[in-house]
Image 1 (cartoon, helix red, strand yellow):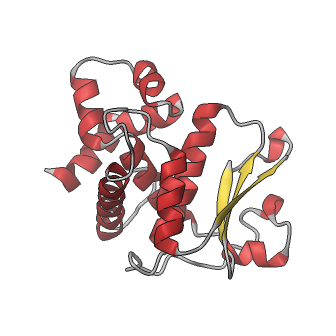
Image 2 (cartoon, rainbow, N blue to C red):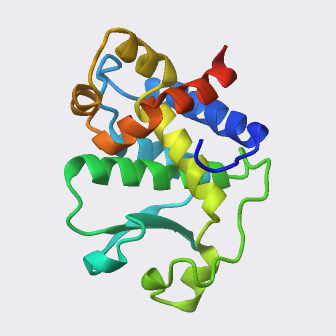
Length: 199
């Protein structure tokens, strides 16, 4: 991976994604669809965290679009803030990634200290001072991204698609996730890094 993450943290997130996928599979009427429902995933997150989840959109100039969304753990609810005007694939992916922050931060799954003071990292989104304190670390961003990819496009399915000679664009279209994310996680070095956790 592009960032130096601890193997046990990656393993934890992959295990979490697998468990969430199992729970998700018990809820959805169509388990054969490759397009996972973010609505069902949100319901599951609300059940496990025992808190409602609210979505907020923000508008920022193109020059400041460093990130596309973030997650805030409020006292009585969880808030996911995303950029407005994301296309459907990006909105699905960003919401999924931010929901995985909620799963990672849930007492049932917490086995590592991911929260750090993030003042100054994402000041464009600091609508209030409490928001900055609640933003997760850069490592946590990558871990949530890894978990989200594993949920939306599991390693075994990425491997099968690549073995069949599928283009990353066709994979992205089938799973309704951004092509750039499929490209990133289908790179040989990233596939090899993930294979170590599955073989």
